[in-house]
Image (cartoon, rainbow, N blue to C red; front, side, top):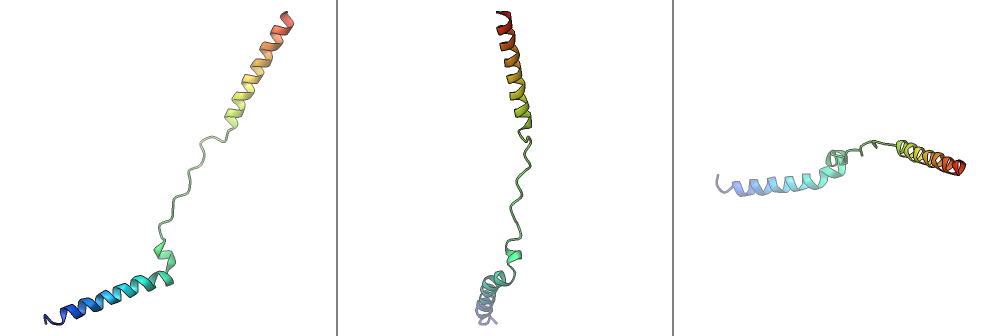
Length: 71
């Protein structure tokens, strides 16, 4: 019995090696089952920044109009 153990381990190693090399060829989805998570959605689309710039420009126009008409 002790003489058969190394041959059985060698046979198992060959089968495991072949399975490791051949299985990904027939089942690529199983090999790459874990895909990267999608990127998170943006928290702001930039409209609030545009609105803030518009308010600053309107305030600047109001101040300039007041300075020009009061002079």
